[in-house]
Length: 323
Image 1 (cartoon, helix red, strand yellow):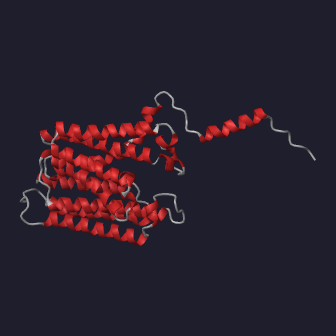
Image 2 (cartoon, rainbow, N blue to C red; image 1 turned 120 degrees about the vertical axis):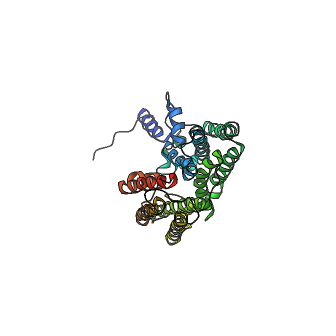
Image 3 (cartoon, rainbow, N blue to C red; image 1 turned 45 degrees about the vertical axis):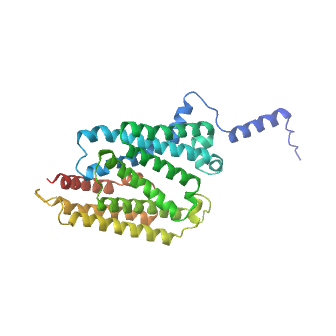
């Protein structure tokens, strides 16, 4: 029988050092902290803030001089508020994220961004963005950004653990993005705009939650803990209900009498209903399959849906312009 060579103290130390290196956070290197802060701010999510153009576009004032100066600023300010929430959220959840198979790679959890730095950066953005809005845009926009920050931070702390309320909070965040552009330009918001936007957002949020619930089946604890409290049947009911109300609201806007008189070549207002319904139905395919993750990834990742969206945008634009 051969004997295994004894492991020397040096070998023990080397082995222990290698294991410890795998477990410890990666050391900070030149430029890694700024990159980590940028990653924590979720640049891929910034596309959601394009919704700030929704109300001006619906009112036909997207290309006005006031919109050209204010909307880019509002986009930047809303992005700063969203980044502040992500920074605070990741700092607060750093310990829990380190035990998660995928979230442990987030910069704060991985040690690339120290927790105090994430808190400081998030707090700074949360203070500066509403202050800049009050000075450069209007007090109303500043108040909305402050309300958004308060609601989202409350979501990070406790509301994300409350059934149904979590869906409402995330949906309201989308609606606030769509409303803030109108507030910045002093545009009255129609009831149809609010109904369609609100329930359209709820449709996408519930579809995302449904997809997460389907994908985590049999993997308890692999994703949001609250998903174990929902049933897939309930989430399916929510996104189906929201889709129906969004379509109804849009149809009522398109077909209502007493709106802008039609003087164009074709009734683009009414025809846009076709593209809108096709977009909802196409998105519902992914929701039903349980693959409706981030809305921007679904839209940009499916050529047919992207094409339908472009056709709808063209029809909607022609309807608003009354061509």
